[in-house]
Length: 109
Length: 112
Image 1 (tube, rainbow over the protein chains, first blue to last red):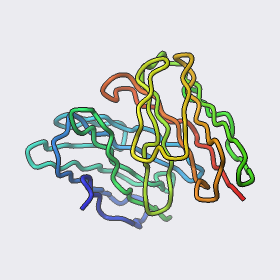
Image 2: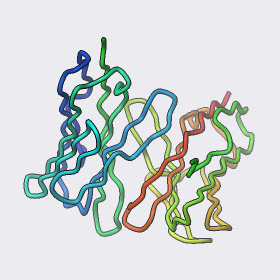
Image 3: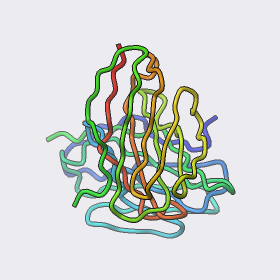
């Protein structure tokens, strides 16, 4: 079992829908990143969270340290949101970055 | 506004060739990382460096070496490329604790 699990693996939504991607982890963490990867390779860190909630435009990320769970929400989804979303947890005493396997999101018109 | 630059987006090499992948960051970050990304396996850490001339093995260091002679530059070296090293290679840099984490655009290497 991976230390960091994401769901769903694949997600198709229509433009305008509210989207939620989930990330759960089984080890202690100090922080968690939500990453976005568009086709072609480049990865961007959308948020780094250690507690609570952060918002940037239509993107909202929450984390519940006690429940070992984080969510990424996209409001009013748009085709340009189509990408792979990856959660990455800062784990262990050596501060290792442990990645989830990613959620492939496609938003259609 | 480029922050992490990888020297080559696409490379094609032959088995046995020596391959250099260069990464430069302009943010004065202490930490630099090399990952490879393969379908179904996600991102896996090859090597990281937390200071000049310092390096630590990641999860899959076999067949790779690294060099960090200057703070801004972190090079990945494949001494003798093999077909199983065909992959997307991603460089990243950050402050301590993975704050300000930035990735390069990636280098897609094909070894024939």
